[in-house]
View (cartoon, rainbow, N blue to C red):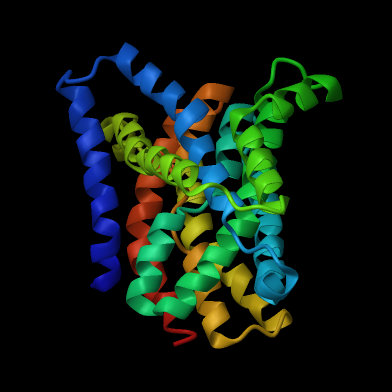
Length: 305
């Protein structure tokens, strides 16, 4: 019940975005501007602030970070391997990029909420470590895959240009540069970035909700079900295996489960919209992942608590 309560506001935010769209409170042209604002300003702000203030020392990162990185790498391979099951007629390149995004991205805000309820401050700290390691890796990796699958050209120069000029990659680079600098980010600047970045979560959820079509959800397709099952059910199994391999403690394992079993991050929807991914598939998968996570998190958490 506590996990359901933590996830319920996400579902309500989806509903609010959908309501705003179907009632005409916001017109389609307005949503396009909101998506662009989120992609170019809000998400980069939260990336800069979270990475700049993260503790990236090797003794802090440790084995948990290694297990999480391996998990994301395997998750990406699983997402792309759906092509072996579904031909291009049923899963376009844009849809395959969405499968990759919804398998590798994770909603850190739900993880932190669940950690506070299920594990306490120590698990919260470990998830913060996971954020500092995975945020740059996942964002750069997803931009690369989207540039490769959805770009108008597939040459290395075109892909490199797309990656280097992407606001998310630039945000990660700025955050890492500040983190490595011999000074801390000034408090007024950090607080400004925090204020701007906090808007990314709410707006991202509203945008995803606006992309939901109940008619599509009633016609569940194979890509939707595969994407919905991979994230909350298959990826945690992968992490449990890695936890044993890396000899993680029960607390570290719980933190990893709370990273693996939550739905994908809503900001991937905005990235897909901007870079040519399949946004309809992203929205549909995210709805089902959110519902499935309510069951998956307590199940897997019971294995290590």
